[in-house]
Length: 146
Image 1 (cartoon, rainbow, N blue to C red):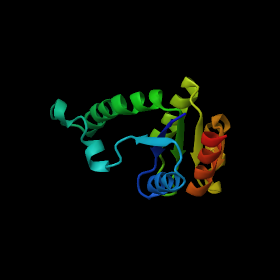
Image 2 (cartoon, rainbow, N blue to C red; image 1 turned 90 degrees about the vertical axis):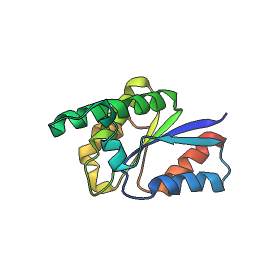
Image 3 (cartoon, helix red, strand yellow; image 1 turned 60 degrees about the vertical axis):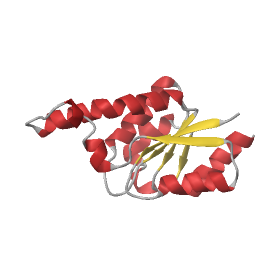
């Protein structure tokens, strides 16, 4: 079986690249998808729908346009990895985790132990909690070659 893995969350570090490269080195039967990880173009996704005078409406339109991609890719995935970083609160990642849970999509959370408590419900629905991309790769290796 070929696995379609959705990578969600924090965009300021290279965790996605580490997982993609690690799985590639192991020749695992996986492909990866993700939301738009370019912050500026993601924020501007709804600009094609016309100018707005208030920041709320720009964000609102862009969130909806981005959701077309995110919703479709999560629905199509076999597994998701949801990353919560140290610097910013990733509310979108929490939303993606909830969407995965509602759809019955298995997901792995990836975050430090310093935010276990605020993520207890998100981790509670996860199939695994990892603190490093290497641990995520190990889980992916196990489930794709088991």
